[in-house]
Length: 470
Length: 144
Image (cartoon, rainbow over all chains, first blue to last red; front, side):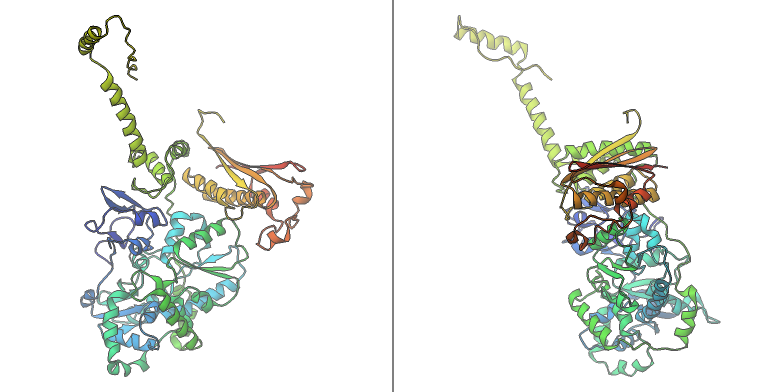
């Protein structure tokens, strides 16, 4: 695990204060309204952040970063096992044999590799079994994308029961690694490093702060972007690695296909399914589920990144290009599942695939624990909203006027944080100052009056009296 | 509801035929209930019933309102529309009965489950309707 695990929720997405200019790009796009600009810096509200990486993607100043592990950590372990996400395969040019990519991983510092696409093949089969049973809760939602799980915990706690209690392919691969390298007699757990090669910050957080399982067997997560140049170098002159490929176990094309949106459903098979990608689209679909509109759908494959995992912020290649490559790999090796003892024993072992702990809600919308207080705050909030300009400009540091009103009733901001309200107030004050300026001290007034009298003897003064002070 | 008790009142406009915005009022109602910390299971029932009622306005009526009143004991949703009215309420309550035109059914609405769903989600439901004038549906949910 990373050293920087705080108490409470772990987050892989962080702010680099010196790069942040305090612009409003990230606050406007954050799907959970988890960012506020304070003192000119876009701070993340930890309880709301789902580590989806939208802010990393949208920051023009590269001020949002992902805290992940680095290849240098491999030296701390005697044996290192790589669990490459299927998205890795899409990073290299068309025609690259996935087994060569695995072989390259073995020549850059890893001792073993368990293909996550291979685990995905097994998970797909397990999901299919669940979908074939009569279901009380429909539709079920895939548990593969950790940012979607967090989104449901934070914004759709109602839908937790819809999450399929099934481990993600990454977790299933970790269980295979555990079986192969940790559960063997004489194995020393502290000498084995199990590393997920990750396309996204969501997985980094899922590893350091797991949901649905008691304990994580994965040591850490290394970004695809970090291993990319190392693998590329090995692929350039591939004579050394070509000799290794025969011994490597690679997932089927369908397993690899999980890297792109729609691939998971394709691997599971069936027609009463929806694939949704992009966190804002996911929100819309989850709204539909909450309205009870999708009861004729069995399964929802939902991924936070546009295009699926290939769109993760820790990948290298353009996701539209990788999506095509993954699709080609999926169709070329569609039936290439390697059956062996490992698969058959794994498929019998439910524990390898099941959540062993319920996923808890993390609701963040509640204004107060006491409902009477919350109701009053709600009313107050509505009055504030009506009084705000409704431009949702973000200059106050909150993503929109509604969010500012919410911050005000929570005691985290004031109405004067709104530029327009401030300007209004300044105008009022300026008006008051003008009035004050016109107010003449009695002594001066006396002098003036005398002067007037001198110049206009016999005439009545037409100068209006200054208004009394408010 | 008087002012000394904690209570809230919200009113949202719904326009007949505006499918693009259909569901916005129910989404707002849902968020408000989450913000006051209502029970998740109750929110779910309100969200479903309110959405069905809102859709009825969009599908059948010209114009209407979704009104939310909530206090510590009750959540009340009133959906009031100007529209054709319901000719035979008892018949309309029959699961599967629908007067929605084909164009609307093609969009996946109008399956004839709206009113039965609303009734099963709420603790009390009253319907008042006058032919060619409009319909008022009042749903009460125990907030505890």
